Amino acid sequence: MNDFPATPKEMKNAILYGLRSALLTLGSATKAELSQKLGLSFPTISKFLTQMEEAGELLAVGLDDSSGGRRAQRYAYNPEFMLGLAIFFEKSDISYTIFNCAGETKEQGSTSSALMNDLPSLTMYIEQLLLGHPNIKSIAIGVPGAVNNGRVIHIPDYSNFQNINLKHYLEEQFSLPVVVENDMNAAVLGYYKTGSHKDNPSLVYLYFGQFGPGAGIIINGDVVRGSTFFSGEVSYVPQYNELNFHQAIQKKDGAGRLDAIGRLDAIGRLIASFAAIINPHTIVFNNAEVNDAILERIKERSADYIPKEHLPLLKASDMKKDYLDGLQSLGLDLMISI
Image (cartoon, rainbow, N blue to C red; front, top):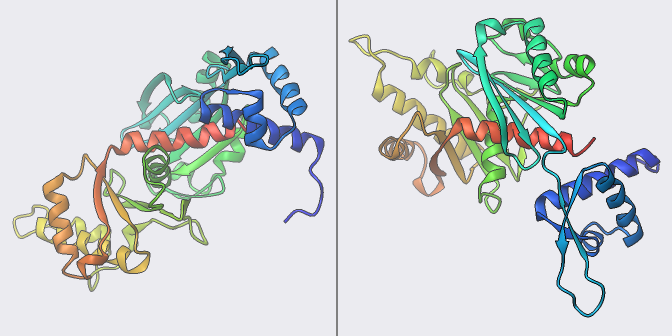
C-alpha cells in the first residue's frame, strides 16, 4: 500500500477516470447520480463536468423530469472525443481497427505480415494511421506470443520482435499509452468482458491456432499470466512418452493424414488436465475449429480421464471478435486513464 498521499495530478486523473468510466457504463447521468456513484461532492463533480463539457468531452442530452425542483441536466460521454487503435498479428496478415469510446468501429484494414515483420515497418504503419486519425489516444497490440509487461519474450513466428519491449519503444515513438498483450489473454478477456460470464469467472479459451495451440485463462475474473508470463503456452504440455500437446495434435496416421482419433484423445487429456488443476467453469473453443458434434466427442473423451461431473462446460465462440473485443477493452481503459 502506498503510504504517501496522492498528488493533485494523480487525484485529478483518478476523478476523470471515474467520471469517464461511469458515464460510459451508465450511458448518461446527472451530476447528483455521478456524485452518489463516485462518492464525490457535488461541487467537485460540477467543476470537472464543466471542464469536460468545454473541451467537447461531454454531451448534454436533455433535462430530467422535474420532481418539484429545478430539472437536472443529464450528460453523456462523447464517444468520438477519443479514438483507440487496435493492431493484431495473424499468420498471413496484420490487421488494425480504429474504434471510438463506445467500441464502434470507425475504420479497419490489414496488410501482409511479410511487409510488417520488423519494428521499423510496424512503426511506419502505425505512424500513417495516426496521421489520418489525430484523435487516437491509445494503442493496443495483440501478439501470438508470451508478453512480460510490454516485452515480447516468446514469439517463434516473429523472431524480429523477440525480446523487444514493444510497449516502451512505441510509447517513446508516439507519446501515447500502449498496451501489448498475448492473443489468447486478449481473447479470453474479450469473451469475459462482453458476455454474461461474470457469475462464473473461471474460464479457459483454447485455440489450436495458426501459430500452434495456446490458451487464455481467467480465474476469479483476473487473467492468469504466471510467474514468468508463460501461462497458457499449452503446446509444451507433455502428454505421451515423447510427445507434447502440439506434437500430439499434429501426429499423422499410417496414410500420412492427421490422426483424428489421436488428436481427439490429446484434446481430451488437455481438458482433463485443466479440470484437475484449476477446475474451470467453462472452456471456450474457436468456432472456426469445432462444431457441436466435435465438442460432444471431446466431452466424451475427456470423461475417460476424469469423472464427468467435474468437467467444464464446452462452448464455441467467434475468436477473432473476442480477440478484438479484448484489445478494445484494454485500449479503452488506457484512453480513459489519461
